[in-house]
Length: 387
Image (cartoon, rainbow, N blue to C red; front, side, top):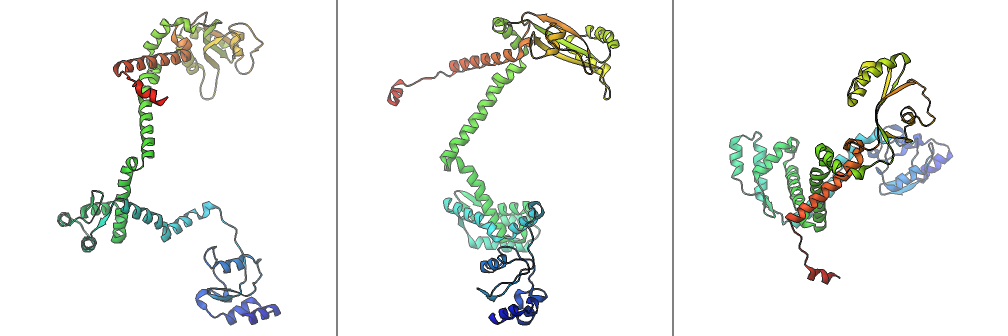
């Protein structure tokens, strides 16, 4: 190997020396001693260290691995491709790699030990032979299988021939390797049973699941009795508002209605006449449907409740005649329909605040009713022990 290296140093080409002196064609593909494209991890670490220490076009000094002595030349390196380009290939490599099964096998073995798994080897082999011979499992075959002894058991669970066949019928590809299919069937059965035992086997997890369950239950009950009811029970909300009007008084008068902006001055009279003929809640949809379309917008309608000096400068100017707002843009001509109220007249005028307070009221009533139905008794003697 060192004689070859000296000849390389003297000027002989690497390809010439590789063709003349390589002595193990099993590891070489193509002429000139060239390997196909190699990936990291496919060769001994000493070999990879030597290759990656070189620059493209350089050859190494002689070095030794478990396979013998080597001189290598690096032709080129390819940049790592984007993950999207090799995702499918990586997934296929993982699927083919036997190491992928190790965590599953290890966990299955642990569960077998935990749940005292017992297998009748003779019955299993007899079952596999029977299934191999009977490609079509008709009613007659199922009757035969139903008479098989129990193949395996764990913690009062019985794995029978019929259950295994039902597993195979749901996993057609598994029929190609019945021994592996049985292992998968056992693993799936153990996992399903483990899942059913988590709360009792792991108390901390059980408490967490109970907390989650109780929390979801409390949410649903609270939603039905308080939150959703406060939003949908309009009669109850209005009744509550009228009974507690003093809680919803305004410090400043407010305008409740609509403010309409028109694109052309000539249309104001017509639009105003139509608006005044409509119920307040119908003004916006009717005007928009009448005067606007997909390509043209001739009117703008704002509906709500606003107070003097509030955040809407247009309302301040048009309704309350205050502020510095000047009409411009696409809708410079305005009028309004509605009234200035000194105080709210209905729950709708203060819906946000009224709904929130009505929720609090419903919750207090609900809790009082629960306390009456289910009295809480406190053992004071035990409480004293906790202090």
